[in-house]
Amino acid sequence: MRVAMIGAGYVGLVSGACFADFGHDVCCVDKDPTKIEALNRGEIPIYEPGLAGLVANNVREGRLSFAGDLSQAVKNAEAVFIAVGTPSRRGDGHADLTYVYQAAREIAAAMDGYTVVVTKSTVPVGTGDEVERIIREIRPDAEFSVVSNPEFLREGAAISDFKRPDRIVIGAEDERSKGVMTEIYRPLYLNQSPLLAMSRRTAELTKYAANAFLATKITFINEIADLCEQVGANVQDVARGIGLDNRIGSKFLHAGPGYGGSCFPKDTLALIKTAQDHDAPIRIVETVAAVNSQRKRAMGRKVVAACGGTVRGKTIAVLGLTFKPNTDDMRDAPSIDIITTLQDSGAKVRAYDPEGMEAATAVLTNVDYAKDAYDCARGADALVIVTEWDMFRALDLTRLKAALAEPVVVDLRNVYRPDEMQRRGFTYMSVGRA
Ligand code: UDX
Image (cartoon, rainbow, N blue to C red; front, side, top):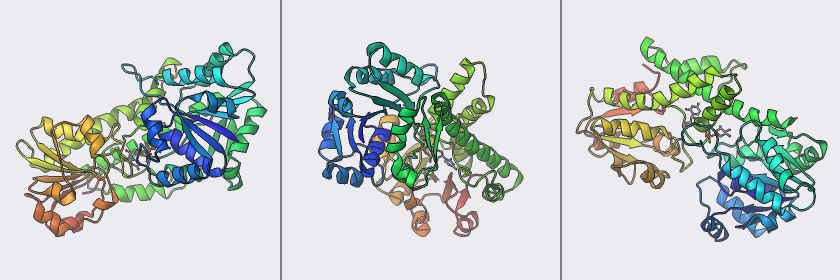
């Protein structure tokens, strides 16, 4: 199959490279000439494990190429995926569809022969209808279908999520486009990944419902963690105790500083807005979003409490800045609110993150950056683990204690065991554990 991928961002690049790896002929298009030049030099603009090798192999095999202009790629393609950004619109939280509609107009002008136009970007219900209307207006004569095919990729695990998905959701309104999509995903279908066909609007909503449900699950366990702290219970045991119930499932029950990233905060907000606009408010998700955003600053106050009620004039070491490990993504990372809360309370912050420090400099001010975890701890009055990078899971505790001015550790990811930390002489606080 000949595929054009519009948008060589996170989703576009991962999906494009994986489709090429299935054997399809893929051209990834992006308007940013510096990105295309970098990709053509073999440089990958984002940090995602395995992606550089996958791109290089498929470029070498001649199945993957990059272009700054979409006309040739779209003209050749049987399927054109729209994988451009849908940021939160400033002010109201609605998904900003400017880039999606712009892509639709350009695709309309360039397509040749029957073309399936697929929205992969996360878009509110009804966006596919509007994409279809736009294309039809520009090309009343054209033969095309508009399909929704949402992605469920986790950053840091995107390639395996793409190649071994729990399911593939196809929102198609006609058999012909369903046939093309089935062909594109055939390699996965042979691996018995379930391919779910549904209406286009249903597929669009499924994506938001999935992310809102996962955000709710995390927020639920976070609130149970707060209660555990008050009543002397252990949230990890509670999570295991409920998670082994098949109806609940054990994933996404890790208590922590609150969810962040490019999807959950933005998608919950967009779902809330869509639901309100359609007079079917989803109050549980409204509460989840509010609880989660309050939680991040509350984690800053938790650190202040661990420091005896004040951090004025103190140095706090922060390990981990990105919203989760194995990414350099700082979007809506809890570290931002935690660090600003500490700074507002008069603390000096020194931080270390293996991949996120460059991106952090754009969103944080007055932070000193360290060269590793021990350098970060040096002379600090407390150490906070915000992101559970593997390299923070087995720190040399003797060395760490010697580096700190005060042996205070606030572990917001429950990486260490309270009994061991106490035995080692640390004042140790974690999440939802006595
Ligand atoms: C998510 C979805 O998982 C993916 O399917 C979707 O398409 C895009 O959004 P991603 O944002 O990359 O992926 O990360 P994910 O691993 O889901 O984590 C999101 C946030 O939740 C992170 O901040 C993470 O630390 C937090 N989280 C996750 C928890 O606090 N506890 C958990 O148990 C799981």
